[in-house]
Length: 66
Image (tube, rainbow, N blue to C red; front, side):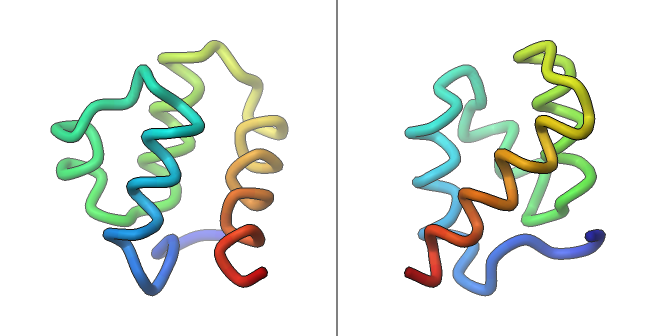
């Protein structure tokens, strides 16, 4: 899964900030909705493995459609 995150990036970035409080507004502005950049940031800030970061991100994306 590559490319853009949510179609409503502003709403999604709010959910990202709630779930991962070490990610700043500046980080999210730099990421600009790019999936791989957010995953890389999760690897660095939270020490997550790639598979876990991808899984948690996918779960957060699914929550946007529920």
